[in-house]
Length: 129
Image (cartoon, rainbow, N blue to C red; front, side, top):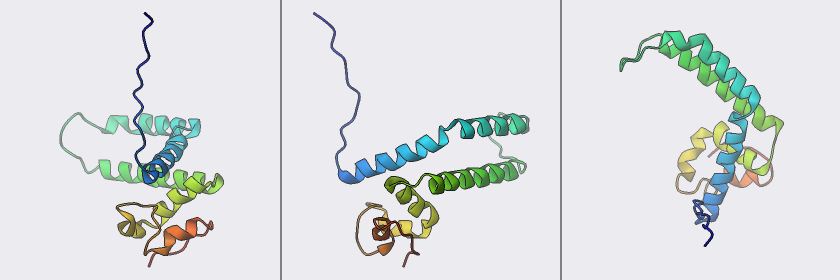
């Protein structure tokens, strides 16, 4: 008897989960890009000696974190602008309009009350209410 293959794939239980998975996949593709990986490796090589294997957070960590965060945000934003797609526009909307997020916590892509998500369908970005 031949062994059977086991599937570990989880079924997608809703349309909103499928959309979420597509968005996460888009962001994953951005951060797995070789350019991002090279930059991240260079960044780690530049600062790894600053860190110690302790529970204490040193004040020197803050500017390093801020530099990293600033570059990552800028890189992701640039990639979203360079490679617009429906799912990436949704990511950009949530990225640029973080204030809008409380309106969409249960289903960030639902079409209720807040018009900012509806405008993504027309490829327009507007301010949240």
